[in-house]
Length: 182
Image (cartoon, rainbow, N blue to C red):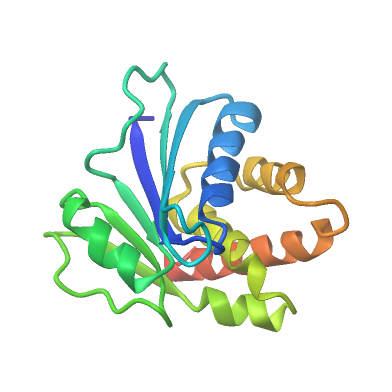
């Protein structure tokens, strides 16, 4: 596997950083790959811009910063506007389709949308939007094994919420698989 640079963007309170942690944990602990994580958020925490930069590779990673992501996951319009100019031509955009209208994309970008907020609300907790997006990421990209991501989700969420988060992961994963025709 070649090195994959991933940026996840959204607003504080959407679980952006936890999404990055789960992807990195799935790669490094459960799939035997190397992974790095860098996080950034505004001083306001909730409601301000935040992002996670995750790099995944079979080989050790010498430089952890994501300059031109291969995969961009966005959960807000602001994150889309801020990060899409740096998406690699031919890269992949995963977006919350009810919050983001992807326009002016770099050449050859493959885009995949999901109504993650609506799915989370249907599951009973809007807060699991990020886990729906993690499942979607796993289903669309095939970068990590579904079992590894599922284990990382279960190891990362608060006790007592495992069932809800597992259902959120599966909802996003199934939507991702349908999106790519699997």
